[in-house]
Amino acid sequence: MLVKILNQELTNQITQLFESQLVEPVELLYFFNNDDCDTCEETGQMLEEIEMLSGKLHITKYDVNENPTIAQKFGIQRTPGLVIAGGGPGEVIDYGIRFTGIPSGYEFGSLIHTIIMVSKRDSGLDPDIRKLLEDIKKPVHLQVFVTPT
Image (tube, rainbow, N blue to C red; front, side):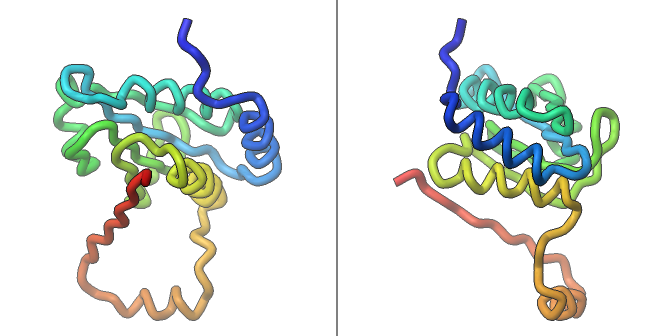
């Protein structure tokens, strides 16, 4: 049996957060590559442990070698890759949120926050910022890079 990635204290904290803040179902689309990915197994296990903390979370797993069309549809170019979407099993509302690599360290908090945000179906942005964003007419590709150091 694999050793749990999330300790009991962290599991309890996340469970409390999810119980108090998750509103709508969240679909986690997890893309992995067993042939060439150093952290795919750990990432998959961590996501499974998170999924078990709420009935509002559902993971669908895709091997990119067996599902290249689906990976391409969601713009997954590297593994492990994660799409955090609204919906539930069989329903995906894509907000364009992607994580690449194992979301550990500071990224883990961002992952949990993002799951909650998607569940609420609200970015939390100030109305003035939303109005400014409405004026953007061209597609924008925004990436945030974080390192574990």
